[in-house]
Length: 392
Ligand code: SF4
Ligand code: SF4
Image 1 (cartoon, protein in one colour):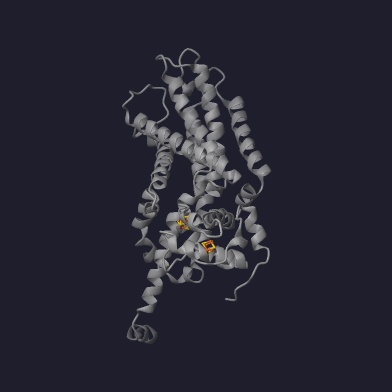
Image 2 (cartoon, rainbow, N blue to C red):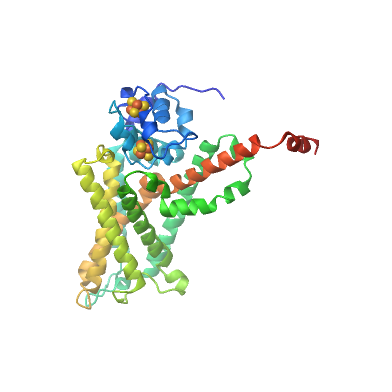
């Protein structure tokens, strides 16, 4: 296939936060110091080169931006201060927009107006929903959420949201696989993908490639945030109704003991989210590491929404149980505010922005492994074997 040069690529990438491309003189030091780069998948220099030369098709088919965990070591060593680590980050935004067929991701990343108004719009919609449909006679003696909004309504909407968002995300993941596999997509047998399922789960749950970076601190923070919101997701989506009544429901008027497993998970997740997001926000304000030097507006939006979601989540819990009967009015108001920040965050971030990284990274690792396995299987297949298959 002929390689096309796109003269507009550089301008396009700048909209997603790529900067200082022209400073790079391709010395390759960044690739040399990157702890995650390999001979098979060398980066970040190669990605910088593609961007400089306008090699759009090659860039879109590249797995490398997802194999980078943004430790920032390459930027620390770059003699030209070309910030290759930040280029990789911005390329991930660009690729996220390329995979997304709806165009929402591109608008979210490239327009501050769209970003702010979409978040505010969703928040107001949720607020309006509560205003119109929340219970007209909530219990004001004792904080009981079921008298404010019926649990099964929240449960249905929750499941609906999970299904719709998963459909968007999975369709984008499929497009990513198509770009990365190219012509091989039709040729690689399904069994080769299936043999990598364990790896997929392992990388999703542990982000273990991140642990190969010299400074382990960021891996711990990343893991803390990731496990926290995965646990919250399981609690809220999986256990809101107690999975059809077979388990104790997550959202209930019953006040559980401090040591109840759901409470313990909730405390861990709240601590993880508040600590992790506060750490990242303070870092971004102080710009004390290469990875915090440049903040895209969507980085801030993600952190603020996640921080507010965790804060309002723990406040609901406190207001609901304080003094035995809780503080009903405060509980209902904070519950509404909680959903006004949590829903826009999930709707926009899961399929179209930052949270989609959670899927793109492990899937890319699997796709890269599968591709190598397949290419090796072709390379090492014996002439006798190919003769046999031809005569058959
Ligand atoms: S980004 Fe910096 S370290 Fe990497 S090749 Fe360019 S000049 Fe060299
Ligand atoms: S940020 Fe870290 S992982 Fe990413 S390319 Fe640079 S050195 Fe490698």
